Length: 325
Image (cartoon, rainbow, N blue to C red; front, side, top):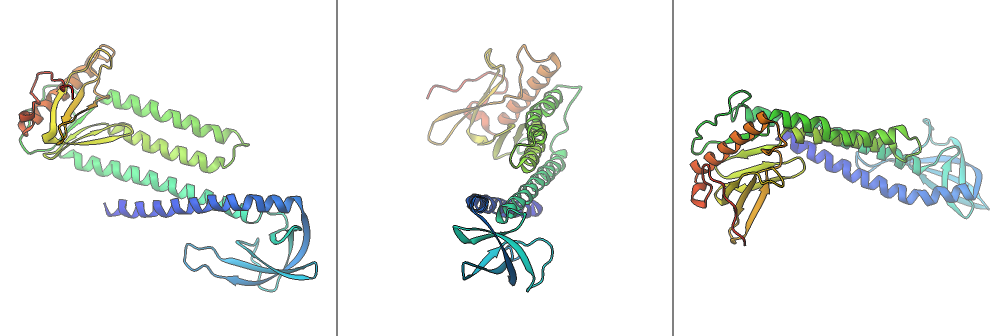
């Protein structure tokens, strides 16, 4: 958990940096266009280096040059090579705004902002992948003592009051999602890599590939986790947590969606439902997959009954629908 906290902090820092670089690109684009439209070449002298106030701040390079009998100072974010104070450099300036300058052959602050954006997006993508892998491994270690997935026998064991329980969709269902859903993002990532005209193709592809890894981990972890306090339904995109004592029933799959539904009632008396989309038991599912899911639903009903949800109507085997509000 400490590692995840540090990673979240780094992710926030990266996100702030990405926003700052996007603002820099927005500001520098018209500046560089002005220099392109009204270019004047002058010779400037590197006079001063102003260190950044923090480790995350950029240094500022100050250059002076003369134009139309005026001495002008310009601040640049970077200089090519390793010039020393007093060195002269070729500069391109905007004749209509002489304080807008860049080193000859570069795009000045626009190139710096683009480079910073690439670094920020790459770092954020790596952090997201590390967080996904760390969370997945941590959950797997914690869940080893909670449940052992059954592949051959489908008879649900008798649940114990106060224990935790983890129900997973059938392995065939999860493998299908892992191999199919992330493919959409992989194809989207291939598009900027294959088209050199796409702006920021590298960062965009990196971000999409990082989201692919996160989506694959989410697909593998779909299921229902029960604790004495909460019933957590993990989907591919959304995780929903319901107080166990508020659950009113688990309804079997209907003919339209072919997926069961968890019903509960909040303290104000309003009824809610959440479809267990990845526990399909309809005719379109394989026979072994349907039997696996039916056994998991039976365990869920038995656990709810054993842990006090029976008072709210979560029967052990009967199908129950939530009343109309």
